[in-house]
Amino acid sequence: MSPRLHPSANPPAVAPPGFAAGLVEQVLDDALAHGSRIHAIAGLQGSGKSTLAAQVAALARVRGLRVAVLSIDDFYFGRRQRLQLGRQVHPLLATRGPPGTHDVALACSTLDALHEGRPVRLPHFDKLADTRLPPSRWPWAREIELTLFDGWFLKTPAQTAAELREPINTVERDEDPDGRWRRHCNQALAQDYPALWSRLDRMLFLQPPGFETVPQWRWQQEQTALRARAHRPGAGRAMDAAAVQRFVQLFERVSRQALLRLPDIAEWTISLDARRQPLTVSGPR
Picture 1 (spheres, rainbow, N blue to C red):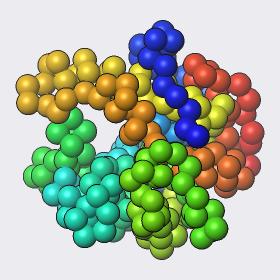
Picture 2: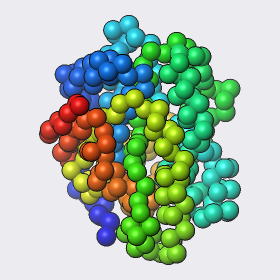
Picture 3: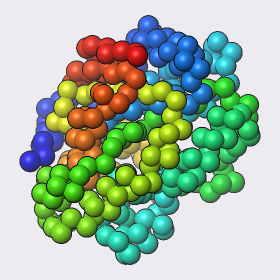
């Protein structure tokens, strides 16, 4: 059964300010030493992958490199497309996040342009509005030398049919009793995403102590989003604890698969404690 969220446990309200300078330098040096043009940072929700990517990008710019920072989140389908998926396949596909809710073809073409140093507009998904910005508002990137690409399930392999059979949480049990949603997500993971994974030159995995920390980390993210919404008229409503608990269950199956498989797939893995502090480093290899 899924871990429970305990908002009264008084965790830090926001993520730590960032990773140690030595680690940031190590990540950048690893990318450059291996000639990585598209360097991936994988980590479950709230693990600090976007923070680390921003820190590495800042250091790269200090060194005079032209850098782009992207997330797999920037390639979510817009709300209208997801609602159509929800009507045609399964209602849970209207919610962004799991495999099958991304424009993989757009991600591949964008990374190809960045890898080749061609000018390209960088998509951006507005999470407060829950839709992708129109292309006219995407910034241009030109002559990029290094792209940092983060995502919560990068290079995660699909499960077997037997592994999909039994629901692993209440959302799957109550809202996907016949397994149609999870089979669709798993099929997308098996058929659509490998083309994207093949464009990632090297990958670092930020490994949490277990899936049990993810609901709490996601709750902290929601508190940050709540403060952002306070200054954004018309933004969507923040999630309460119950909504966050349900939301993370949509990611639980693939997250547990990532925890199981990515340490053997990523070129190196950094194990984190519950406060996102690095404990051990395996690799790079």
